Image 1 (cartoon, one colour):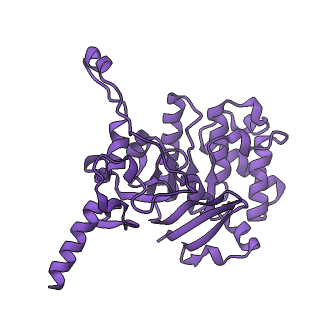
Image 2 (tube, one colour; image 1 turned 60 degrees about the vertical axis):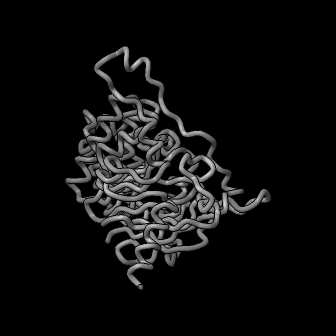
Image 3 (cartoon, rainbow, N blue to C red; image 1 turned 120 degrees about the vertical axis):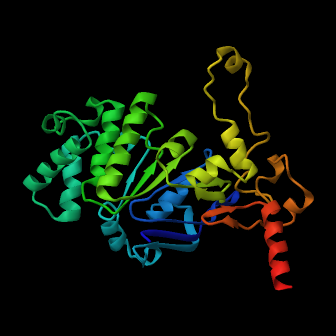
Amino acid sequence: MLLDVRDLSTHFVTPRGTARAVDGVSFAVDEGQTFGLVGESGCGKSVTSLSIMRLVAPPGRIVGGSIRFNGNDVLGFSSDEMRRLRGNDIAMIFQDPMTSLNPVFTIGDQIAESVRIHRGASAKTAWAKAIEMLDLVSIPDAARRAKAYPHEMSGGMRQRAMIAMALACEPKMLIADEPTTALDVTIQAQILELLARLQKEMRLGLLLITHDLGVVAEVCDSVAVMYAGQIVEQGTTRQIFKSPKHPYTEGLLRSVPKLRRDASVAAAERLETIDGVVPSLYDLPDGCRFGPRCGHAVPVCADGPVTLTGLAEDHAVRCTLYESRRLERQGAADA
């Protein structure tokens, strides 16, 4: 297993209280696999990715769990070991390249710097590698574009440059945090197609973080749905889209606009919404965190923490309905 995250918890301790941004999250990503982490804003997706890279800024800190990469415990790495790991073995793409790229250096210089630092290459070799990577991500006239500054490129070009920089040292794992959010639909499709192609060519393990279910359906092999710091459902993409089990997953899928041949029918239909609001991470419910918004909630949902219950191979859900069924089956087996 390339990346194995087990019971990861990352909390933010503030004067207001403790925000449990990530609370007992577990998943694994293998070589050549695309794993989607999906959920609405504030559910803990980005904090999960920053935890894996050990980039959580104070007052946040990892308080529990394990993160193993290629069998090694990342949480036990020194600062120097983490710097060697980042970029070299695990790379990350952020949603806004303008905040990640340095505005006073050319694109080529920034890619070349990464190659020099992580691979010890000469300036000439690193520059050649920068041009090669820009060409790989389909930026036209790569030798000329390498001399451009970030503000001289379009949003799609900047995102391609970020991908080129992330892959310049040939990492085994790529984390893409909302890589298409700020782009128009046409450019989004191009970036996703590019990521899918490079992932297959380089046999990358790809962790894709997004709130866009359309993106997940198009490129992911497996999916985990997050809500209020926890994974509430996990399975293959087909399982999640064809047979969702958690009420939150069902609500997300119902809220996606659907194409209709009959324009009058489409105009008459209203997008479905999920009633209520996401709970504060400072004051989470004692039981099911989705319980206050769930149309299927029963008194037992508020009794205490709900565990992630396996339903079938690779499919699990955090819901009292399935947990009670599991306990019934276990009791019958014990009897």
